[in-house]
Picture: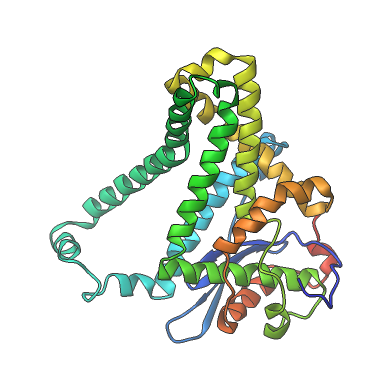
Length: 327
């Protein structure tokens, strides 16, 4: 955070790092800016309609959190794929120099429909891997330590699972951050945060002003993930104490964890909205793990990345800063 500036308001603008680009959402809608292979910046306004605008029930507190999470994941994935295409990343990945013998054989002998099926299967496997890493594995590790302690840890099962999940999550992010392409995406993530902070501090959106800002922002999706883990521990602990027989069957316990996931997302979303409007002790405590984690998920951007962040940000804000503030 710049020492020579003070926060005048908190914006309703949020974003996502892309492949050689940034997507922003604000009062004027959504837009994505991507650095093209020729060095220019392509900024495109995107249409993003919330289903809660049509179905009012889905806009109720807690419920809207789960709905917003799913919508953001789908929209963010589409922008990510589009940025890969615009930036020339797909062409580089699919070039003959970067293709393995298996890749070449598949592209030459399989039709696009078959490749689409393979992509779909890969996506399903990815979901199963995420389930295994962040749900099944923490439970098995907890069972292992509980058995070593002759059942003495049973009452602390939810807490231990939460700690295991955090450790696995941190280790996973630390490993993927070592990949060259992921590191560049994390640099764009830093540019996104710095750009938002610059505007919130009432400074002109220039590369020099943005460069001075902090890359750690409390409304980041990383903070949201940690808040969800904390809320999951709280809800799981309550269920574990109220219905102790449920935790003894790992299959039933996994189902319970999946069933409460929408509730966890809902409360997590409400907290992030609350954190955007307040700066009290509770917010600081619950936001602290996510802010620390951003040391891994964000990197210091170069000036060319900051330019992309500024272009995307300007496309979604109004001429009046008061209209951009969180309500």
